[in-house]
Length: 397
Ligand SMILES: Cc1ncc(COP(=O)(O)O)c(C=O)c1O
Image (cartoon, rainbow, N blue to C red; front, side, top):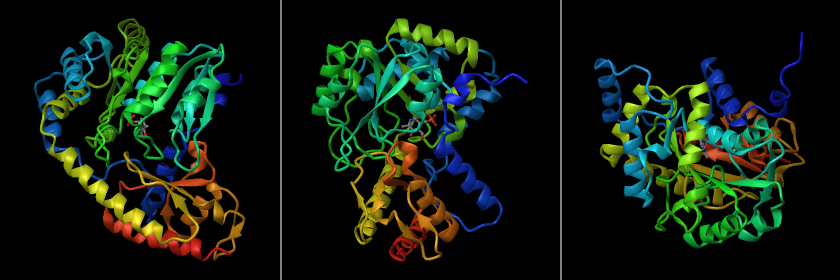
């Protein structure tokens, strides 16, 4: 039998997806599990979105459309980008995708050639590096300071070589919760424009922010819109994870190339999901605000609790729904059950085996000293899981 394509062996499976599958399997087998691993809101998709999708099926709007998506979907996204982000896009610059992950893939596939370097600030969402590798590119990691996890413009300048093609920015960030301020984005944009790079700006957590500082899209800054692919989706803010619907906005020539790729791969995301997404963009915003309020409350309560746990460190998230906690003071120690823990993967495995609490190893995000807690679970889960975590670490010797 011939071997598989080299590009397959180049990439690792998604650790966040693996942790989620494991947690769901264990729960299915009847184990008591407290799942703070998954980045999936515990709320249902709002009713007006579900109704719009059902309505589209009832009306028989279920035929093939253009690969880049339905015209009314692209118009709704263009209106949203103008209304919420002060970005002017024509519908032809929008491509509907099967989730934001697929938008990131499309952008990388259209931009990155074999040997091209792509800058990725670390900690990073685990998918970026693997998709760059899959497309033959070379991820170049820019290690953010562990004290604030914020990228500095000088780090970008220093890493640039003749092969650098693009940078991937994610704000608010999974897993750190860092949301860059306008002045920081301006300093990045200056280097990006000066060095003629593409920027893939993943803004999927834009509505989940816990500071008063307004969020700015880097594409609004001088010289940026012509070189930026804005990536967004409906999974997080509208609780539509399983609908697999997202989009990207790009310069027209790039959007055309991306549509060409999509036309040969998936054709277009489900019309039904696109109708749901239009209702999300055009309908009431209350559910997003209510959910944000709930996440904010959970985040503050978790932070307060973590303050009481010995020898762990974290920064308060400004956005998204994760806490990225440094637990490395416990590496080299043994758990109460006698398991030796020397890295984030062993730490998370022992916590799951001994206490039933699911979290994600920092290794998945390029920072082995940390572990990621998601606050997408409801209070009853959080309020059992966190004391279990505290007891677990404080009994380590
Ligand atoms: C930063 C980031 N981008 C994109 C995605 C994927 O979103 P979607 O479900 O729309 O593919 C995630 C999901 O965890 C994420 O954390």
